[in-house]
Image (cartoon, rainbow over all chains, first blue to last red; front, side):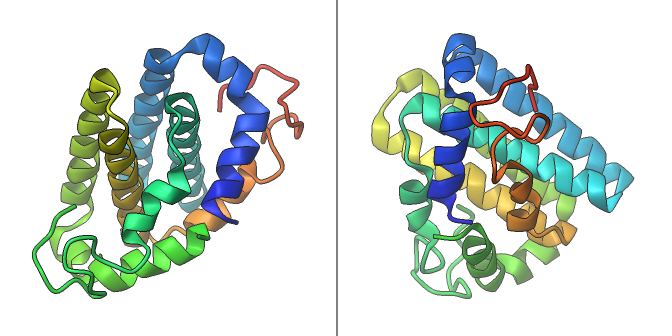
Length: 96
Length: 96
């Protein structure tokens, strides 16, 4: 699945609700999912982990929709490897 | 760009460093970027926003590499729309 496709599907699926909720509340929901991901990392149960990773990604994408950011275009910084040295594996000490 | 392609590129680019740093420190880096995203949302400058969205996505993906989670497979819950009601736009009140 392309990043742009996920973003478009989430826009169609949730944009109206995301817009009513607003950026701050959507950010709060995303961080709540980050907390659930932290807990899943501690438990280490595979299905739960996959679930929480997908939820953080979905909320990040909803937030990008609200902020008017094309996530695929933004992610293209990483398309060839390290955004700083351009190498893959990274040949510098860039920590993003 | 496909989600799986981004994950593979980040694995090739950063996995060794991610593995040395470990899951907890990688999680901490991700949340640091979530904080930078919060600030960028407040400033509202477009390039900065795109940059921070891509950094959060990159750290989330690095963390998925460390946790052994296929992010594209995980995200497939959202491929057709709402994971709960299956509709797009969502026809239920699911908040992910």
